[in-house]
Amino acid sequence: MPKRGKAVSPTGRIALLHALAHIELNAVDLACDIIARFSVHQLPRSYYDDWVKVASEEGLHFSLLAKRLRELGSSYGEHPGHDGLWEAAQETAHDLLARLAIVPLVLEARGLDVTPMMMKNLRKAGDMPSADILERIYSDEIGHVAIGQRWFLHLCNQNSLEPETTWQGLVKKHFKGALKPPFNDEARQLAGVPQSFYTSKS
Image (cartoon, rainbow, N blue to C red; front, side, top):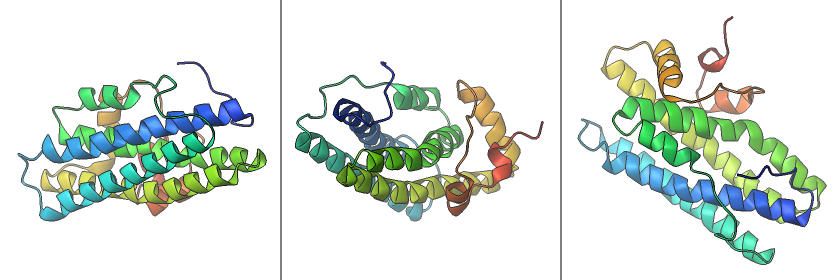
């Protein structure tokens, strides 16, 4: 994948919005996958309600981004997209706890870390409509990380597992690369993810 700039130029903004649209479209599929793939588990109805809500909101995010791309003279599909989300899905296809640990609690949580700077750069470029879309996505994604954390804790409790060390072990096993600071501690805490989960003690 070519490296994107800071979304100051029109071309850079289109590349950024296209990359985000690709992520959101993949996120729709992942929310549906976490419902269907792991339906063999003994999970309450609220689990399914939560992920249907996530799929619906991710679909709205994609629609908003695709519309904005058209307004800027582009469209979804005109640029390449990375396979990072699906690589994570394949890596955790056998294990719901691992899926929750990696997709919402690493990848979506990373979105909470980087989105504020994206919004700042878009506003600096005078692209308020795109910044407003990211503001909506950012707000919803806090809720999505919270849903991931809620069901991760539910499964840990159900299986008598200590959540923090379990999460850290699953990340070490299933996530390629290191967790990259700076972390948006405020947003992560709003989602119910303690700083001790992701901050190294060394």
